[in-house]
Image (cartoon, chains in turn blue, cyan):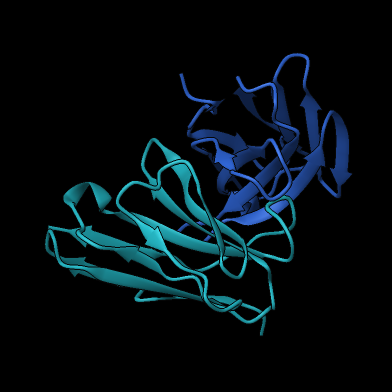
Length: 111
Length: 113
C-alpha cells in the first residue's frame, strides 16, 4: 500500500465549477501537508501549505486537513481554464524531512 | 532572477555510462532536493540536503549519489545508469526546510538505453 493515495483522474469540469481534489494517507506521523500545481512540461509550484489539522484559504483555493481520517483536500472555487494542470499533494512527518508525494490528479477546466 | 537551473535538460545515454546532472540555485537556499517523476508513480524524492555537507536519503535513493560541497550546487550522480532510471528528474530548493516554498527546476528528461 502506498503511503499517499491520490486519484490520478483525469478530472474535467466546466469553467466556474467548484473542484475538489483529495488525498488519503496511511502514516499517522505526517504533520506537514502541501499542495503543488504542475503545468505541462514545468516543475511543480507550491500552492498551499498546512501544518497539522485545519483549514487554510488563499483566494480561490482552500486546503483542508483531517488528521483523524487521514484525509486532505484542496478546493478550487470559480475554476478557470488557467487552473488546468496536475495537482499533487505532498506530506512529511518532520519539517525538512523526507517528502512523500501523491501521484497527482490531472485537472482540465473547459471554457 | 531567482531560479533553479538544471543541466542538461535532455539526455540520452547507454547503460553503465556514468553521468552527472547538475543543479544550481541562486537564492542562497539551505535545503535542496532531487526527485524523479514517473507516470502512475508521481514525484518520488531521491535525496535531500538540509545544508552544506549534510545529505540524506529520500524514498528511492538506490543507484544515485549526491554531494553538497557548496550551498548553491547539488549534483545528482548516476554511477552506472540502468534503463529503470529512465525518468524525468527535478531539482528543488527552499529557504530552510521542505515545508517552505520549494522552487523547482525545469526538469531533466533522462533516457537510458
